[in-house]
Length: 325
Image 1 (tube, rainbow, N blue to C red):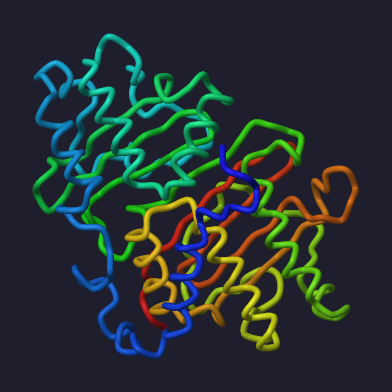
Image 2: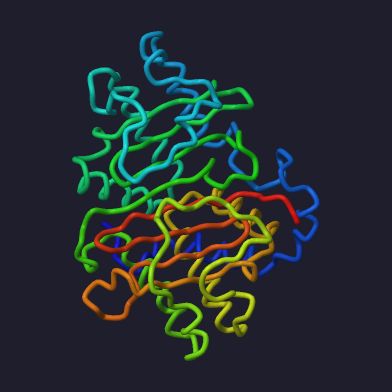
């Protein structure tokens, strides 16, 4: 199990900062938001999508009837911190050993090295392991419209080969961990990092950033450029504070594969960049009453990262291209 400082995630974080720092190089992007192929996204030939295709080809007719759906099926659009998208679980004899191994490979390919280890540990802690989670396939892998999805307690993961262009991670995703002790929770390091931003604020800024009650954790619809967002505007911060926000975003993205990080960064830039974001911290749910704010939110026109760290972690991410005003 990796140490809390996540040295193995540094490559992703450094790359994130390099791309964000060079945002001017993609200044033409907003004119083309929503067009296929715009972003540096996963493709149908990406490693995860390739394994999804292998998995799909091994399915029998009976298996396809049970776990395969049209691409636009409503199940693909649902998000929840604790649900099963289909009835069979990965460890059931419904699947062959080969198919179970392929599911594991897909999870590995949508994650960073650190993220994969963390996901396996989280699934083991929360529900007995990957064998107790469920999968579904929407559309047909190898065509322009397909998506593979994994759900279970505290987890929704997707692999779509960029079938939903401009939607980072293929759509909204969920992660979490049922450990209530912050020192043992696999994702409390993210709270520690975001609170470094809070500690860097002056008194007036902190007053803007700290709110009483958080919105619902699943309220992660993208609001667009004309919306009002809770907390303090990153664009109003000093340069050193903004640099800390960028570093923090890099830490948050650390568990995921580079292709998804690249797409998320370019989507963020097309929607107005880091300056378009707001950060909010909530007095609600202050574990141990230590004023390390366990519930926080990063939000902008096409970006929501809602982290509910009390009584344990539920986190919802939704990042996607939005129409310009």
